Length: 400
Image 1: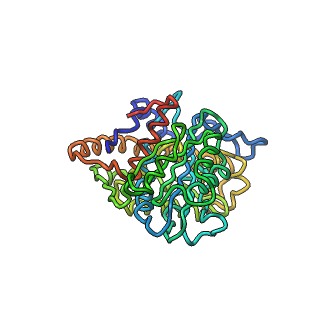
Image 2: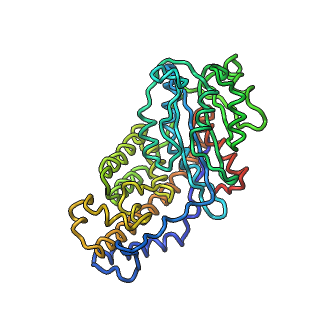
Image 3: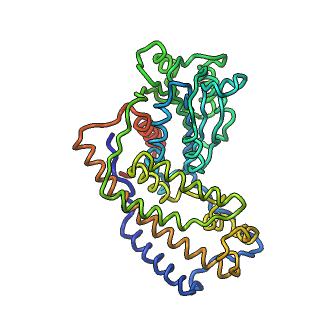
């Protein structure tokens, strides 16, 4: 699969802006912050969080975790960050879409039969670290796979957006008949269509087998894509000369995150754990995760001081006691100044990672071209191609 370069928007203007941010950071270390206004912690009314983009994509992954699906789960883990980072290339009206993802698993004998051997692992969320944590915790075990049931359940349970602008996608993957269970698959598909949800089916195996044909033939022209994968195909990661530098920048980026709130320390630790999970496949995979972390779509308002302050300044005063000692003892004005300095440093590092990953993507694209090999039959390649198709249909421009 050709992976084109990203972040062409990273022009000279961005580098100019980062130099300004660097100046602010240096000024902060000298205690001079008055030139840049910031809301006070004790403001009577906290400003509303920045409005979300009208551009939005919601994706639910429904993965078969029966005993034969270890390869499927492995491919999902290996290509999570690549799939998400590819979406960052899409723009409409000058904005990248907000990204929400959900996770279900089904067909596992460890689940309850009365619920159809189905479990919601993660609801639709922007918390990609939580998604990664739960994905890496999945295990397989034999069971009955009821595709219609899990499609119907996810259609009903998840907080799907009603806006016609929003791209709403379900990707369901498995290797048994699509028609098993008491819930009729065609009826489940019809209920999804009625809510503007496009269901895409992924068969793990021979598409011409009796089971494989049910995954294709059950879809109508109004439904999504059918494709098949070789779940046992090994995902190939191409190393680049930029991976070490990206890893170093990512480590420095992590240091700009400061835990706040009762659960802050655990969630901050999870950020590092998900870095390790990504790196367990390769430094190249960690580079894909770092690219997403360097985007405006990576937010941690629930536990990070800077993101929490941007979302709700008044919260910082209420939870100040949970901050590290060197910060909790600062007066409000000094704390605001410190937050500003940390944010400036973070934005500088994010721009640095974006520039490095742009070079990395160009290198990898050329390497794949020269190798004349691809991964067309893997989960990540298929989903990436399918998502891009839906983005183009909704008039998004793909920035190569």
